[in-house]
Amino acid sequence: MQKPINSNKLLEVGYVKKTHGVQGELYLVLDPVAAENLEEYEFLFFLIDGLPVPFKVEETPTIGEDFAHVRFRHINTKEQAQSFVGSKLLADQADFEQDAVSPGTLVGYQLIDTQLGPIGEITAIDDYGGNIVLTVLHLKQEVLIPFNEELLVDFRSETRTMTMNCPDGIFD
Image (cartoon, rainbow, N blue to C red; front, side, top):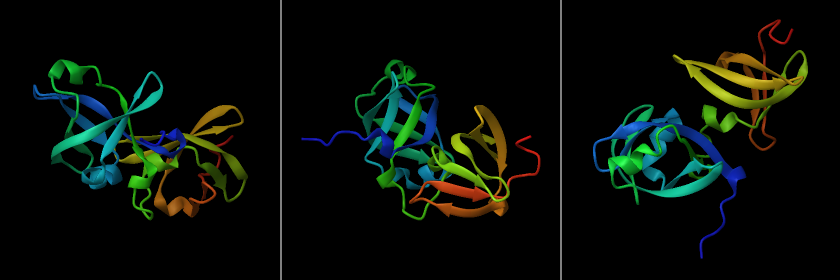
């Protein structure tokens, strides 16, 4: 009997950009840490109607720094693969190395500013041409905060908090 899926233990690691070939292969855009560990995953999860559905990774013929071509069990034609284009990909948090931190793992963390204290929850991470931007819910508004490792003061996975020296005036 399989254990139930705990969606709180799943991390967003990428999305399906397009199909590749005619045998159901998918072109995935991945977080660099996920791409590095892709061959270790037995399953990746697609969000289908808002629910995580596991698919067994069959083959990973091409893996780049932030992309991969992947074949999944039960996705055997280009037509079947087409229905997954645009889908978010999730991975079990246990599949990540304990010391590896990827941008996707930060969603749900609480951001703390060294000057202002608690700011809010990180709700999204975006990559704008190599520039990482955090979306934080602060006083019922989304605030975009540029992320740079030099601004990071403290990171605690056990409490899901991250402390940063946020740029002056960003919350005004």
